[in-house]
Length: 209
Picture 1 (spheres, rainbow, N blue to C red):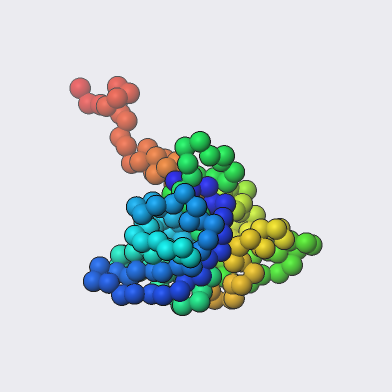
Picture 2: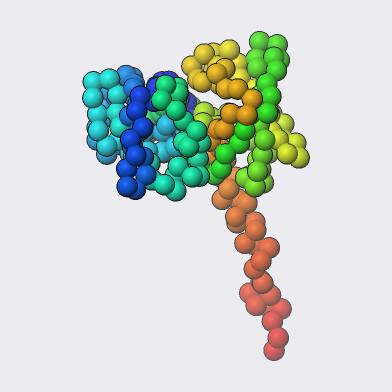
């Protein structure tokens, strides 16, 4: 489990094809502290397992399904990526519950200054049903508050500090990003959909007899 608070911006140093997918060698420093092989690190919001470590980085494997379902397919050597270690049980919780399991991808449509902040507008897909204004969303692993939800897009806003410690200012129009919707919103949506499909008449005494 993660919080959506980015700890470090690393860099893709090498991509090595493997029979079951791809090995990513990522240059990093801060997230190596206390990390061991087998631990989880969110890379642009994707929960990956550390398979090797050096003094200047780590390697994580991604299977074909993960590559197809996320923006990993667009990453190139030299691309900056947002990193977060899994939250320890005794850690402070500053963002929202982020699982590292991506719901889909989106492209950046536009951005514009909004005072000292910067407003970003992203396209939406089927996962839009989990989004509400002022609700939470993780974009490339960053815990964010949704400002507006339109028919085919949503808008978030970042203050200067958040832009300085993430890669958002480096995003270009059309850039593909990873989306993880709020875990509680997904559970609530699933529960309400199941409720609508359930025939409660037998339980409420409305059955034949």
